[in-house]
Image (cartoon, rainbow, N blue to C red; front, side, top):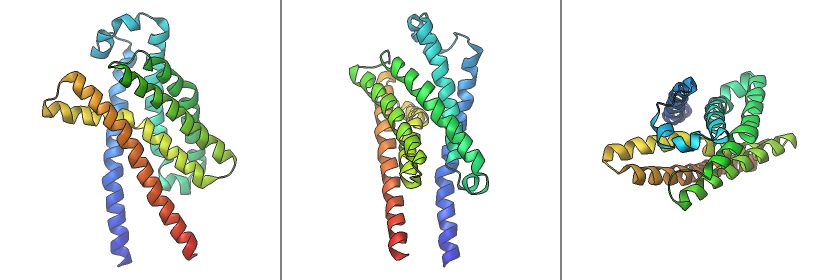
Length: 220
């Protein structure tokens, strides 16, 4: 019975993590052509007036580099095998993730949010994302320095959920494109669903894990 339950648990974990890993690595792969620094990309062409500014141009490339690096290191962080077998890898990938978020990803994201496509509300949402990403990561760093591992995990889950909006946004965008939604409508809805959905999902996972921890603590 226990073997069956454990097998089912592993199956559902793989059902979640395999698509996450695949879509994450696919996003990283799709960012690589940008580093040819060619201007023949639709995103760059439609915002060519912004790319004439050195600050925006630099922020864009720093941001996509930071995002790709964060996604790769975050996948390492959530590997139980790496955490148990090679803690040094976990620590160093965590340090890279935190540094990249606090000093590269979040600051450039905040700057670029002022020029984001969409209405005032989409720009405000991008600002919130950058600030929330920075804050959750900072708290995760602060708490691990205080040796509060459980709270550290909770805040880093929130940070990772925000980092993963880059992935989930593209998944929703493809789905809604196939349904036949217009470009701007698709963009706005995909953005809001990915942010709110990721945050709610993170809180659900935190709630489930907190209940499991308290239950084991009470039984013990």
